[in-house]
Length: 167
Ligand SMILES: Nc1ncnc2c1ncn2[C@@H]1O[C@H](COP(=O)(O)OP(=O)(O)OP(=O)(O)O)[C@@H](O)[C@H]1O
Image (spheres, rainbow, N blue to C red):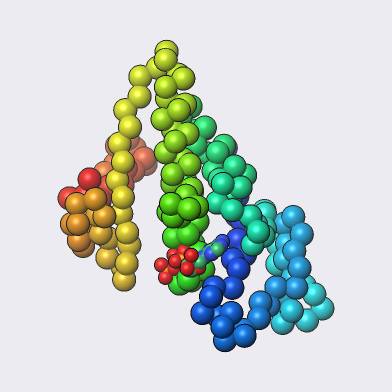
């Protein structure tokens, strides 16, 4: 059965906003909801989880990513994606940095560790790395731009989507 988990991550104020003495609108948070100073009656914004600003990418991966990756190695389709306005922390969360690797690094490590342990099975691992920017799809591995999204009907009512010309 398909399952979706939606979490919101609160990021600290970035340096350039701190310098302008802007302040956070965050009033407080609980396990699955947060409260804003500018919303009357303290109405909560409710999600499956709320990730506080002191939590690092490793915590985020352990809570949300690990099970999906473990499931994928067992053959269960899984997707992790970050969504949000510019500067909200998508790249920080997914790609990260040398100092704080993102979810992609943790997922890669786990995939290869789990595959090594499953000696009774044979795996084929392939990877593509794409960006959708201004409604155009780019291949970040080859530099190919403006890729077209195509669909194939593999069996009745089952479609397979792919990027024409992508890796
Ligand atoms: N949880 C976090 N802790 C510390 N810094 C963060 C966090 N999330 C984001 N930042 C910082 O905030 C800034 C903006 O984040 P980031 O570049 O990840 O945003 P983005 O959503 O990918 O933006 P865009 O859509 O414009 O590419 C960066 O300087 C990043 O290091």
